[in-house]
Image 1 (cartoon, rainbow, N blue to C red):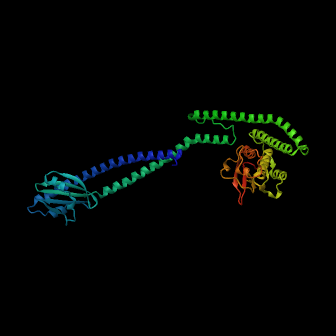
Image 2 (cartoon, rainbow, N blue to C red):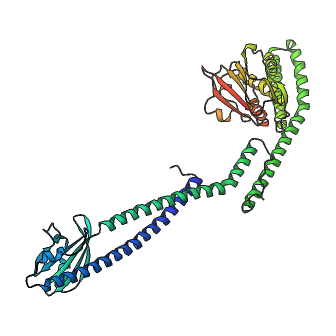
Length: 450
């Protein structure tokens, strides 16, 4: 189950809360307004029925044989009200009964026949109706059936309006939640950005406690953590540098001794000559490892940018490694503002990696797009497996291709140095599958335009 993010949960909570409150208020408002309108409508209907009942009683009692229908027709009831008279169980109306008497419920008739005035709301043929019963004589009851269609339409409109208000309130709550979340998470965004800067090599990234006094403890703790991390990294860097420097002297002695053995190899027996060759190879590999460690220790320093013709630098690196000049491709200006020493080693390590594990470089592309530079080196090897791609630029990591190619004497630091040099320029490194097979190592360097 995928859990929604903090921002989504806060926005949803604000929206749900606003909807719940607005729905409760809308429901309460609807009930109050409905009861008020019904009470007012009922009072008006009763007053009108009392007046009409007085007229009917006067018309019936004034004549010996009254024309009840004529008396009812004299009433001004409009189109919404219908007058009925029940005399000794017989119904009279203004015109032919069109089912009006069926709207009068039996319980209401029983109360009226007992001499008790009564009012009841019913639904007749799907239409809300108010029935008023007024006894006007011992055996005579006047009924007035009043349609509530207009009031029902008013309540429907009120329901739609209150529903719309509730929805708008929920949307406003969601918008407020989004704003509040953005405001509250702004310090966390700065923390995340600072952490990302630190991960990219900017060890001087810090947070200002004065910007968010409420988060002073967080910013102080974060800055303390960064200080301790920076101090530890500096200790590790110095340790690696010191150890590497201390190893250089005995290595030089070993290298000199191995060189002597190599020069006298023909004078040695086969087993001794083989052993001498192995010693020389391992000493050489050890020297490369120490040199790479020293370079890694120095790579945390900022890049010293200056205008550099990277095309000439790439040609020089290709020529040293036997890569054909035709493999170099350039797009845009080739004079970039970079650190010449770092970019030279970056290109050299990519070419060495292609030679050791990819069968040699097939293409070297230099592209300047706007202010951003890109370096790509293609090879024709087996490529880098998806499992190795996320970690191929880490220290002492050698891809699976190292076990299947001949270059098993690598130190596992060449691509780590590439990543370090790119990070010193504020850039990134990545590896992709080359169309047609092989690997494509890519370095993106921002701000290379001179």
